[in-house]
Image (cartoon, rainbow, N blue to C red; front, side):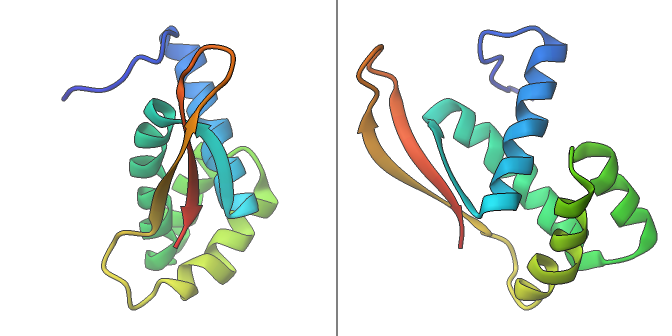
Length: 112
Protein backbone atom coordinates (compact mmCIF):
# COMPACT_ATOMS: atom_id res chain seq x y z
CA UNK A 1 0.00 0.00 0.00
CA UNK A 2 1.51 3.28 -1.08
CA UNK A 3 0.76 6.35 0.98
CA UNK A 4 2.07 9.87 1.34
CA UNK A 5 4.51 10.61 4.14
CA UNK A 6 3.85 14.38 3.95
CA UNK A 7 7.38 15.13 5.16
CA UNK A 8 6.60 14.00 8.71
CA UNK A 9 7.37 11.06 10.94
CA UNK A 10 4.60 8.60 11.83
CA UNK A 11 3.32 10.28 14.99
CA UNK A 12 3.23 13.76 13.48
CA UNK A 13 1.55 12.49 10.33
CA UNK A 14 -1.13 10.62 12.29
CA UNK A 15 -1.80 13.66 14.49
CA UNK A 16 -2.04 15.91 11.42
CA UNK A 17 -4.53 13.62 9.67
CA UNK A 18 -6.65 13.19 12.81
CA UNK A 19 -6.78 16.97 13.24
CA UNK A 20 -7.59 17.70 9.62
CA UNK A 21 -10.33 15.03 9.43
CA UNK A 22 -11.89 16.39 12.62
CA UNK A 23 -11.84 19.91 11.15
CA UNK A 24 -13.45 18.74 7.91
CA UNK A 25 -16.28 16.95 9.69
CA UNK A 26 -16.77 19.89 12.06
CA UNK A 27 -16.85 22.64 9.44
CA UNK A 28 -17.95 20.77 6.32
CA UNK A 29 -15.24 22.40 4.20
CA UNK A 30 -11.54 23.17 4.62
CA UNK A 31 -8.68 24.52 2.54
CA UNK A 32 -5.41 22.56 2.44
CA UNK A 33 -2.71 21.33 0.09
CA UNK A 34 -3.50 18.77 -2.58
CA UNK A 35 -1.39 15.95 -1.16
CA UNK A 36 -2.92 16.32 2.32
CA UNK A 37 -6.38 16.43 0.77
CA UNK A 38 -5.88 13.16 -1.10
CA UNK A 39 -4.90 11.39 2.12
CA UNK A 40 -7.71 13.10 4.01
CA UNK A 41 -10.50 11.99 1.69
CA UNK A 42 -9.99 8.26 2.21
CA UNK A 43 -10.07 8.65 6.00
CA UNK A 44 -13.09 10.97 5.93
CA UNK A 45 -14.97 8.52 3.71
CA UNK A 46 -14.27 5.74 6.23
CA UNK A 47 -15.60 7.92 9.08
CA UNK A 48 -18.85 8.59 7.18
CA UNK A 49 -19.17 4.86 6.46
CA UNK A 50 -18.82 4.17 10.18
CA UNK A 51 -21.54 6.75 10.85
CA UNK A 52 -23.81 5.01 8.36
CA UNK A 53 -23.38 1.73 10.26
CA UNK A 54 -24.50 3.56 13.38
CA UNK A 55 -23.84 0.84 15.96
CA UNK A 56 -21.90 1.20 19.19
CA UNK A 57 -18.74 -0.43 17.87
CA UNK A 58 -18.62 1.97 14.90
CA UNK A 59 -19.19 4.95 17.23
CA UNK A 60 -16.29 3.85 19.43
CA UNK A 61 -14.01 3.37 16.42
CA UNK A 62 -14.82 6.90 15.22
CA UNK A 63 -14.37 8.33 18.71
CA UNK A 64 -10.95 6.68 18.95
CA UNK A 65 -9.81 8.48 15.79
CA UNK A 66 -11.53 11.88 15.96
CA UNK A 67 -10.33 14.47 18.46
CA UNK A 68 -13.65 16.08 19.46
CA UNK A 69 -16.57 14.22 21.01
CA UNK A 70 -19.08 16.78 19.68
CA UNK A 71 -17.88 16.01 16.14
CA UNK A 72 -18.52 12.30 16.75
CA UNK A 73 -22.04 13.08 17.97
CA UNK A 74 -22.74 15.30 14.94
CA UNK A 75 -21.24 12.69 12.61
CA UNK A 76 -23.54 9.94 13.83
CA UNK A 77 -26.67 12.07 14.36
CA UNK A 78 -26.62 14.24 11.23
CA UNK A 79 -23.94 13.38 8.68
CA UNK A 80 -24.51 9.62 8.72
CA UNK A 81 -28.25 10.05 8.13
CA UNK A 82 -27.61 12.60 5.38
CA UNK A 83 -25.61 10.08 3.33
CA UNK A 84 -27.69 6.99 4.20
CA UNK A 85 -28.73 6.36 0.58
CA UNK A 86 -25.37 7.29 -1.00
CA UNK A 87 -22.88 4.56 -1.92
CA UNK A 88 -19.61 6.44 -1.32
CA UNK A 89 -18.15 9.63 -2.74
CA UNK A 90 -18.90 11.82 0.28
CA UNK A 91 -16.11 14.34 -0.32
CA UNK A 92 -15.21 16.67 -3.17
CA UNK A 93 -11.83 18.24 -4.00
CA UNK A 94 -11.85 21.60 -5.80
CA UNK A 95 -8.53 22.99 -7.03
CA UNK A 96 -8.02 26.63 -6.07
CA UNK A 97 -4.53 27.47 -7.30
CA UNK A 98 -1.04 27.68 -5.88
CA UNK A 99 0.01 29.02 -2.51
CA UNK A 100 1.96 32.23 -2.72
CA UNK A 101 4.89 31.35 -0.46
CA UNK A 102 5.97 27.99 -1.85
CA UNK A 103 3.71 27.47 -4.89
CA UNK A 104 2.14 24.37 -3.33
CA UNK A 105 -1.14 23.40 -5.02
CA UNK A 106 -4.03 24.40 -2.75
CA UNK A 107 -7.48 22.78 -2.82
CA UNK A 108 -10.79 23.03 -1.01
CA UNK A 109 -12.11 19.77 0.43
CA UNK A 110 -15.81 19.70 1.22
CA UNK A 111 -18.51 17.22 2.09
CA UNK A 112 -20.86 16.74 -0.87
